[in-house]
Image (cartoon, rainbow, N blue to C red; front, side, top):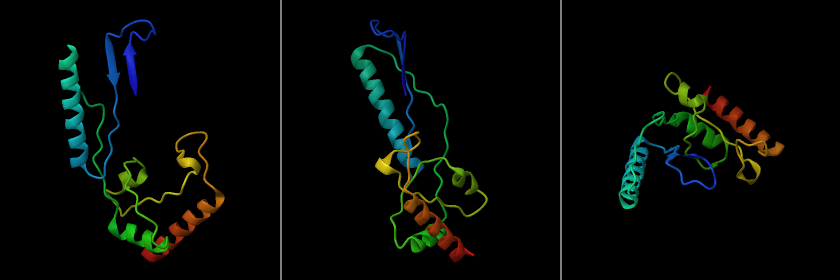
Length: 139
């Protein structure tokens, strides 16, 4: 997300704000990305005679889903690939108190979190069947 002040098309901004949502399977990768972003911002600011301030709006540490849950889902899905996700779903909060995992079903065209998002009924049924198979295997 980028915002500038003043926000008029014919005025050079005095302030620009950039928000980066950085996600990775582990905290070390996020920290590395943060260092690289900070270094690049400071280098650019020096080149163009600007100042830069880097802050943090929010942080949620990486959470690994349970290997047993992942394994049961992999078997139930006939070997579908595991997908790393930085998504902050309920499984992330539940992981602190219970075994948890997530199942993803494909959205047509890869569109997600949009009114245009659509998942074919067949893919919904496949996802439900994987969930059922994993739940039965874990029971």
